[in-house]
View 1: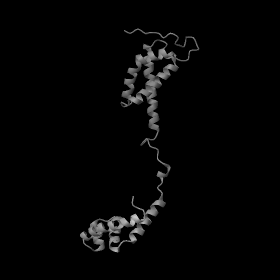
View 2: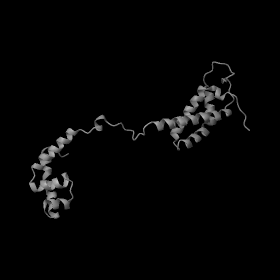
View 3: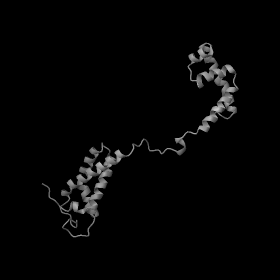
View 4: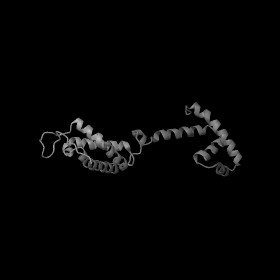
Length: 189
């Protein structure tokens, strides 16, 4: 059987008014005696999130510090009150998290990244169109079929009426011919 140690100077309802908080020694002793038990309960209750459990333990001890009447009957008698306070704070935290939209990441999106700049896209499309105009029509037709219209090699061959091997060969040579055109315009990184 444990003996209870009353805390001197702790204000109770019948004690002298004027004492509004626990002193550092009383709070340190309260922590030493009960923090492990409270932390174990909170860690299980928060899904093994020890950091969150420690935050709730800290809030619980702040409430005990602000309410010295909670330990007026002794440090050992304060554990049920501390567990109740910790449970209520834990429930409050759960409700706050449930009410907030779920955070997807820690990064804040840039204002310009939310709406793509269509002017850049139009200019890039125009540059590609001008560069394609400089190619031989056979090469241009193959690139348009495969990359602009997103057709497979077989589909491009069928559309253009040439063998699959010819499409592959023209595609290879078209890309090689397009590179110096892009470089001349400063479009290749």
